[in-house]
Amino acid sequence: MKSGGKSETQCMSKSKINSGDKSGLELRLLYSRRLIRAHTGQDTETVKIEKRNIMVEKLTKEQEDKMVQYANEGIQRGLSSEMPPLSEIESIVGRVYTKLGLETPPIHVSDSPYRALKDYPGTSNEFVWMNHSIESAMFFKFFKEEVPEVKDIEESTELVCDMSKLGWTLFYDEICIVTKKPVVHMEVPNQDIVAGDIKMCHNLDGPAIDFGKGDPSNVYMIAGVVVEPYVVENPEQITTLDIEGETNMEVRRVKIDQYGQSRYLQDTGAEVVAEDDFGVLYRKSLGDDEALMMVKVVNSTPEPDGTFKDYFIRVDPNAYGGLKTARAAIASTWRNEDESLMFDDPNDYCDQLVAQT
Image (cartoon, rainbow, N blue to C red; front, side, top):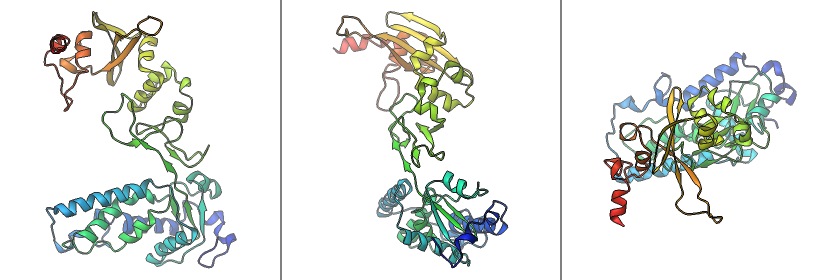
C-alpha cells in the first residue's frame, strides 16, 4: 500500500528504518509529548488545563454519570480487537503526520508486533501504544465536552481518540507500521490468589492477549500476572523445584495454584501445625512471601462408594493473631459481608452454629 507518493522500494529500505534513525525518533518523541502526555505538563509547547487558573473542585451528578459513560466507552475501545477499514487507517495516520507538519509515508499493516519486527528489523522499542493509550484521551475528551468551565483542552484529543482504533504503531519518516489489535481476554478469576469480583487479563486455555495461534507476541496471563506459556498450556511441567526457584512472588503464587495447593503441601512435606477433631492444619513457608496455610477437613457427606473425601481449604495465616489450631482455621473462613471475622473467638465456631440450628 502506498501513501504520500513514496515507492514501496523506498519504504522497505532497512537502512532507513532502524532504531537509530534520528528523524524517526524525533517524530516519536513529538508524538508522545504532544498527543499522549499533554496532561503531564512536561512539554512547554502543549496547552495545559490549568493555563487560565480555573479549578473545578466538584462535578455535578449529571457530569459524574457522564464520566462513567466515558470510562465505559474507553474500556470498550481499549479492549476491542476490531480494526477500522484500510481507508480509515490511512486517514488517521495521515492526520498524525499532518499534525506534526510531516509528509505521510507509506503505511504497512502487520498482524502483530512480532511480525512487524520480523519484517522490519531494527525497529524494536519504538512502538507507540494506540488502543492502550485511550485512558488519557477519554479523560480530556470528557472535560472538553462535558465541563464547560475548563478551557484550552489539548486540541489533539479527538485525534488521539481516533488513534485508539489502531493497534500498536511505529511512526517513522520513511514508513508507518500499524499492527492489528489482539483479542484480550478479561475475566473474573475463580481462584484463591484473587480476592473480589474484579475483571482482569486472565485465560487458563491460552493467551490472555492473543494475536493469533503461535504468535510470539502473545501474552499469557493468569489473574493479571504474566507467566511463561507452559504455565498455561502445559501446567503438568511445573515442578516443586520450579516453584521454589521462582523469584517473582506473584508468579510463584500462580505456579502453586496451577500445580495444586494441596498437592504442593503434600509433595514438599509441609509442617503440620496442629491436628484436632476439626481437621489438620498445614503450613508451608514461602520465603519472602506469606506462608501457605491450609486446613484439611473431611467431607461429612459420603461419596457414592461410602468413603469420605478429604478437602483442603486455604486460610489466612494471620487470622486471630496467627492460626494455631484447625478449629481456628475453619472459623476464620466464616466472614461477614465486610470480610471481617464472623466469630470474635474461634472457640465459638461450631457452638454458635449448633445453637442456631
